[in-house]
Amino acid sequence: MKQAEKDAIPNRAGDLQRLILQAQQHGVRDQAVLTAIGQVPRNLFVPKDLAKASFEDTPLPIGEGQTISQPAMVALMAEASCLSSDDNVLEIGAGSGYGAAILRTLAARVTTVERIETLASQARTTLKQCGFDDVDVAVGDGTLGWPENAPYDAIIVTAAGPSAPLPLIRQLKTDGHLVMPVGRKHYQQYLMRFTRQSSNDKTPRVHAEKLMAVRFVPLIGEHGF
Ligand code: SAM
Image 1 (cartoon, protein in one colour):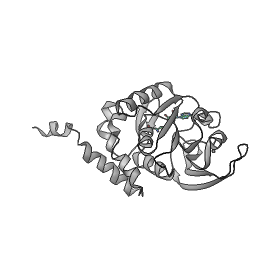
Image 2 (image 1 turned 60 degrees about the vertical axis):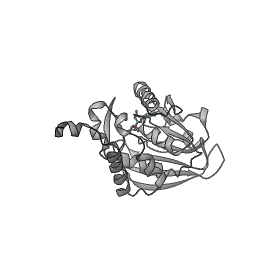
Image 3 (image 1 turned 180 degrees about the horizontal axis):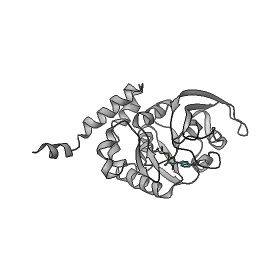
């Protein structure tokens, strides 16, 4: 077999192992999260011509001016959410569906909201192809959350907003985490973890932690940009 033909054969186990190592190099230690990164075939969530690049630790374009997040960042956000296997999780920004697949590997129920209909439809198809039939992919303004399936143990937002949207805090269970990038459009953003501390629905008390500097596409919507 010629070298070019050999190169064309995806070495999935090796490639996925590389993603695990890259996540570990970014400080991810949660074994369940690392196992999930090693199980979800990221190559199937990107356009075909980017399949080879999908095992690099980098964001990639998925159309409509949007990106699939860097895998190590997906892992860091999942780890920061402190998920348990029976959790009910909401993701805002379905994009390719990759993050939702990782979350569904870690939790019992996943709803993901995407504002761009074509991306939501493609994400739904890919998730089904990969066996994640029970992930709810909804279309709408995720800054309003998804009250139908609330309350959530954790909410992960994959686009950067100016602040934590109140509807998301209200849809969290007490002690639940909202993990999201907060800052300015395109720069000076920090990954934040907000933990709901009270059951008062009108003005829930929240503990905020700054985790790291990040860069994400903008969260567009009523409680976004
Ligand atoms: N989780 C995605 C993945 O695994 O491919 C990455 C998503 S990308 C970094 C951020 C996504 O957030 C984009 O697809 C964008 O359209 C979406 N988005 C931005 N504002 C939104 C909003 N208010 N509601 C829902 N989705 C939103």
